[in-house]
Each structure stands twice: as C-alpha cells, then as structure tokens.
Amino acid sequence: MAPRLKKISKHFVADPRLNGGSVFRIYKDGRFSKDKSPYKTHGGVQFRHARGKDAHAPGFYVHLAPDEIFYGGGIWHPPAPQLLNIREAIRDKGKSWTSAITGATFKKRFKSVRGEGLTRPPRGFDGDHPLIEEIKRKSFFAMAEGKPAQAKKPAQAKKPAFVDDVEAAMRDGKPLMKFLCEAVGAPI
Image (cartoon, rainbow, N blue to C red; front, side, top):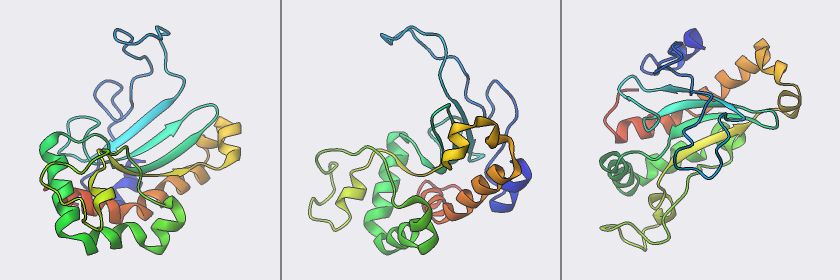
C-alpha cells in the first residue's frame, strides 16, 4: 500500500514493522478483560499520519476478519485537545464539514460518518447548533464494507482488485481526512 498511499498524501505512513508499525498486534491485552483468550480473531492495519504516535491519530484503516472486511479512514478517540479542536472546527466551519461528508463519492462509498457520541452536548457548545450531533461525537470515521466474496474467501484480500478498492476508498475518504487533519493542525 505504501506507493498507493503516497499518491493520496505523503503524510500518511505505511510502516511494515511488526512492532510499532502499521500492523496491529495479533494478540490482545487480556489483563483487564473477562475474555482471557490470547488472540484477536481479526487483523488490522492503520496507515496513520506521520505526526501521530498511536492509533489515536488521523489515519486510514483496513480490518480483515473471517466474517467481515472493512476499510476507510478517520480518527478514533483523539486526545482531549485534538477532540476539542475537531469539535470547534465543526462548529466554526460547518459548511466545510458538511461539504466533506456529503460529497457524492463520499456518500456513495461510506454513507455517513460514524463514531460513538455523547448523550449531551459537550461543555461550551450550544445544544441548538445545527451540527450538534456531529459535535457530540468522540470519534470521527467512515468505513466501507468489503465485498461479500472478500469476507467469505479471505484469499480475495490478496488480489490486486482488493488493493485497488482500498485505495479507491482512501481517495473517497480524503475530504474527511483533510478536514480532520486541518482541525488538529496536521498537514494533508
């Protein structure tokens, strides 16, 4: 994905290292979980922004599991200062936000932005703001489902057509990524 990712943005990194790179570890930390099974049942890869140090940075993501495949981009549980910056950007640049998430290619591929939200408006934000449901989010991401054949036959994910589809999803998600990167002060 590295050469394809460079065409989309030179600021997102495909790091092949198994420890600290783009690939998430296959084992899980079971210390605080009731489920003590040692392995995840899926593989995940994040191509995060070069300024990010962990999974809480803007990035593109690919999820591969025996029963599902999805990919897209966004930011998952950003730290409080970045989350505030994103919320303020949505409040102050509502037209840019709406434009980023309602473009024809974005809507066709992803339908909408996802992410768990607060039940009440965050402190300092007007509950009557027209984009309050977006502002209440704690994460901002858009994911596309892989084709059913890819999930039923994981070997399909090794084929060039799969990589082409992931690249196309990254291109279609670029307006969202541009907005998020600008909100947190990262170049796109």
